[in-house]
Length: 275
Picture 1 (cartoon, rainbow, N blue to C red):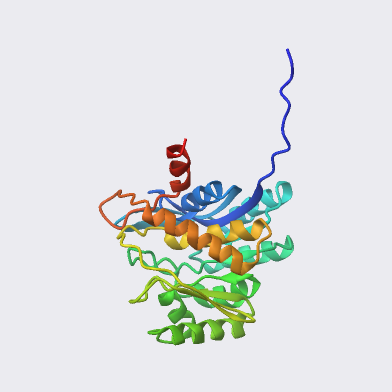
Picture 2 (picture 1 turned 90 degrees about the horizontal axis):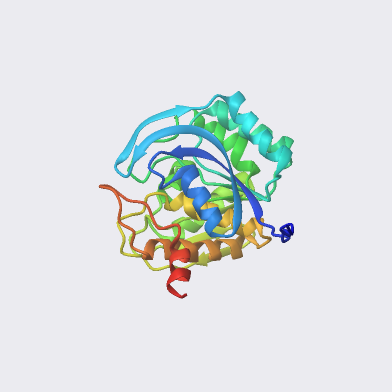
């Protein structure tokens, strides 16, 4: 019998450090779906288990800092990621653990989505963890991706216009020396985002009429990490990720009784329909 010959298939490995969403629309589950859909190899270090669905979060159980460190070390020791996406981390001890591990492993292409409030409105970050997030983790980031409410919490500003978005981004860039993408999904007029770093770049987008937005922030930041893992610039990765997210929203998936999940596999369905 002839042996099967393996092709030299290579996928860019990406690590997600985030919480688990039992309903599958956000967190680790959304990240891994996004990474697979964008031709990357997804890995995970789980910060917390959550009991949640499209209507809200009913419970959070953090892992211990020691076990989180074991997860991160196990990944880097064997399959070193080309990018790292960090999502929900509710506890300051866990934030410290992540920061120390990423520094020890000289992690590259770190995307931090500072998840503070869920789409449903549930608070996901403990009050005493905010200062730890800003002091320990955000300065390590290649890119920070706050939405407007999160940017307001981080800056103390009120953001009501595109000029305000730029000013908030500049404030965060000057403070952390990490590039900042202020996401405009909470704006009234459109869904345009602004990248602030050594230059200011706007990514204009039209609002998609879809009430199901559970996990959109997780999805966007993970897709950006995929672009960085493949060697694209930050701006290229954002453009690539926004196109993917727009497709996932436009697909029209409708599940659950609250703000439902988006269709992470919309490209697969399009490919099947084209056969």
